[in-house]
Image (cartoon, rainbow, N blue to C red):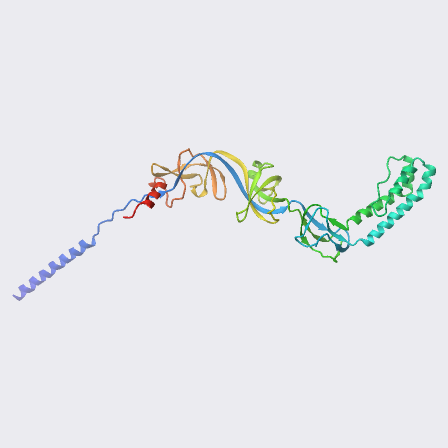
Length: 381
């Protein structure tokens, strides 16, 4: 009985183990989950070919078109100015920017004029006797001489003999020596050639100024120039007199300039050409940084798109029957953010935003404004 009982118990344990193993195996087998087909939503725009202006972006700093760097041509002590000779001081045309002390040199010029007057006076008796026809002319000239003013021009249309006589007595030499002194005397004063502002002042009153020393800088604040560097590819597209839109670096101020000069030399290092734009506005300041938009030309039957949409350098994604496809295009011009392309038929649904993981043949859904507004207005359950 004991052996029979142990045999039965052993058989029961084996059968139970087999049944437990089968149960575990059955529970470990899980059904394969069903993969849901995901359809991405894309944004599109309908292609419409138009005439697209090609705009060349450039930037630079403003400089005054009329500028005067003040240098001393003579030596002397800075004596006076029409206003305080300091940066930011405005001067009107003709006002004295600075005057150097010329009292010593002025005295030498006056002495030379007095000697010239005496020289002409000493010639008058000989002229009256030998050349009576020239005497009245020289008498009138002698009467017109004013020591406190510049010498008047010498009489002309005289006979050859009179000219020989006058020249032989040293009148010509003395006259032009004095004219040279007068020119040098005028350099002791510097006058404003136009209305403007002093932007740099390197001397003050009482300073000893030496010949060749820089004294300051004076600019005209009514007109400025902007120097732009344009690639040689588009240099032949620009024309004189074209309008240029200029924007400040903060984008809040806009100005309008005109192309006044185009350099014909190409910079060998950068392969660019210098273009100069003239602009007038009371709000402008020298050194101001501006961004320019130069309208080079107009491209017909073209479309402007974002550069992010370009695929494989010459393709873009389009939607055909809810499926993505690629379209070969012809890029015409690239800017920093956009591109001008050709070869897109009117009515083509262009993908207007990049799609992660996009590929040709991908099933997509076109986003519509009506779908979005319907979801927003749907009442909650």
